[in-house]
Amino acid sequence: MNVKNTAVTFREAKEKGEKLSMLTAYDYSTAKLIDESGVNAILVGDSLGNVVLGYEDTISVTMEDMIHHGAAVARGVKNALVVVDMPFMSYQTSVYDAVVNAGRLMKEGRADAVKLEGGAGVCPQIKAIAGAGIPVMAHLGLTPQSINAFGGFKVQGKSEAAARALIEDAKAVEAAGAFSVVLECVPAKLAKLVTETVGIPTIGIGAGNACDGQVLVYQDMLGMFSDFTPKFVKRFANAGEVMREAFGNYCREVQAGTFPAKEHEYGISDDILEKLY
Image 1 (tube, one colour):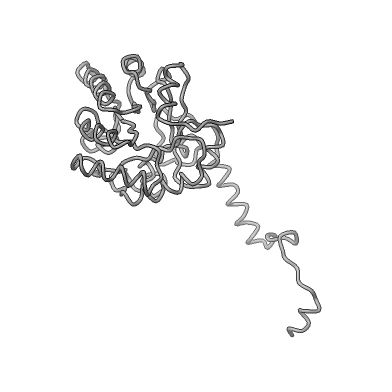
Image 2: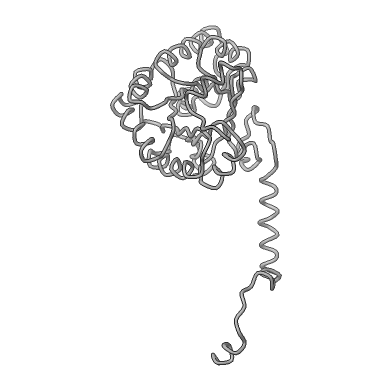
């Protein structure tokens, strides 16, 4: 019997040395398939801005977007921990706004936990949200909502000062009450040091295999999104090509008149038809 993943089971997994798996999802049917695979967590990421809504970044994603997609995912999940991203400017403005918006993601978006980007600067928000009984996943390293400040998608923590700051931020978000922390685009050896330093699970994306778990955008790992492919992505299947082929076959059969065939049709009595003429 599968056990529902929670913030508590995440910490227990780290204590036991068990690796955690996490994938993104943005809709009911995909979430249901991913949940049935046995994944530990599903992230309703603000990456939906890129891979679902067609934005160039995540900054344009709204609370309404996250609530809408979070609720759809939650309806398809039984065992995975559903984590929903707090979008840009939903928590940076004040501690009050952070708690209110995190509460909306839980109540309206049916999240099991929320995720927000930033280190020491957002610890007051993390503390308040966690204090309200809402599990918080932190996010350090390359934080996409701050992409304009970073000057692009760049590996973080490569200098001594940046590496020290990352370690201190990890300690800070743990002390503030985060139950886990995502490390994105961080040198593998630094991510390993962070993982050994904090007591909460680290979830890596482009941060090496020493992290306590891993997360990927499912469209990336299935070859469904080709606008940009980060170095850290492994393609586990070429579903994008399978889909393109299927769509093409459908179009050709419709144009040729071979679909629908007899086996796809519904019948009616000829006696009834004769009365219609």
